[in-house]
Length: 461
Length: 105
Image 1: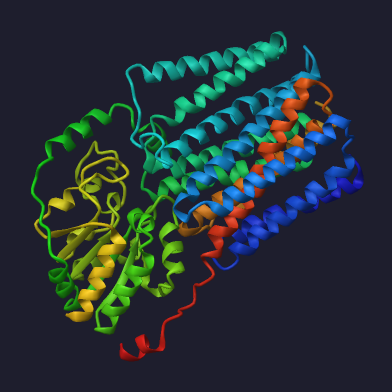
Image 2: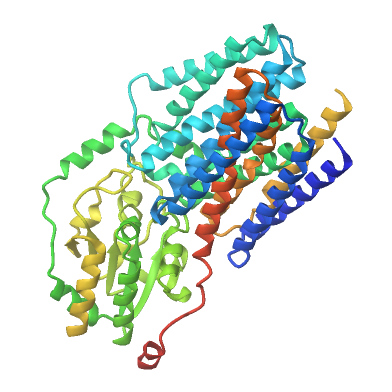
């Protein structure tokens, strides 16, 4: 490696680290992303002069970069705010796939008996990159609702996954110890792709952000491994940074849900029948509904109202409507605050972003720990498109998939107004006892529509 | 073990510690943007994809190289752009209330 290249990579690595540091504070986060992007441009600009192009190589690099840049830009620009988590999953899968392909190309170059120190990182990159690629696609499909978001389990699933893992280990040993032939590492890739699918299938849609974060860390490690194969410092450092910070972030995310990572990844096994049975038993129970006028009067003459926003708010794009209602109530002297559950929406921070877009004052957004003791003093809790985050089953029903998750104490308020499109269960696929609470009034319909009607009725009240 | 491999191992181990240390105090609301930002950074695999694609000289390496460059570029470009879109929402943080609302309160 030339001196210039090495120094450029060093500079890029420093910028990545600074970028990550800035990304972990709200004030500097946006600049952090730019800092990291500058690091990326420097690393790439320093690499290009080192390349020795064949004529075919020059063409495919040009075509590849143009296509990739177009797909990336259009995908990232066009995607709706609500669909961003699955978009991140797709981009992550692309990175994992690229890492696996780079490793395959290197193994082909090394011949039948590569040095152990080259072959080991290559097979690691193939396996982990492929798992990340396939797993990310399944995560995308679950979040995009191309397939069911509920955990998919079948008898003997753990045995099948175990056999898959054993077969992968077998092929790894074959490549490392016997001979590195295309058949072996292509079979390895195929098996790893299947494992990636099998790994994500039994995980519920509500847990996908954690899974995407884990697969993101996987891709980082696969990239670092490819760096060992190519003897490339930039890949090793950047990939490892992502692998390490991504692993910690995965842990922080599952902590925020009050669950262990093991529970998120393997919790579906043996629990599904129990909960579906319980949910079925509750169907057909009566709920209370209220008219817009009644609810508007109730809200207008309250002292304290707490809004609990959820994914439904994002889907209905009701953030402006909820703020209008809140402003009207505040004018009448009602104290309004928003209770933000750490995993409300489909990604942490989702609600903060949406409400900030509607210019909801920052001081009104309260984190769960901060506001949970205030629910008992609230006259009305307005649940807008949230469900699992206020489900008392998390406290009361051992065996429920969300048992143990910290929830907002909405059930302690004097009245709960539950705005929902239908009685359909939330993303975790379980029934919500709170809807049947005698203190609860259901308001069915599109969240934006209902909020606008409520606001008009409050004006008249 | 040769010298180069030892160097690489050193970088690897140090990067693990830096990676953990640097994000250890991130607030919940930045979890997703941070995940997305790190996602863009592992798009550095584009460097590797360029290295194999540039030297492509057989049908197999051409296909592998092209696919790798497309995927890696998508990862880098899409990753940074989508992270920026998420973070652009955080800027309107200051209270931008209408004067009437404050007066009547």
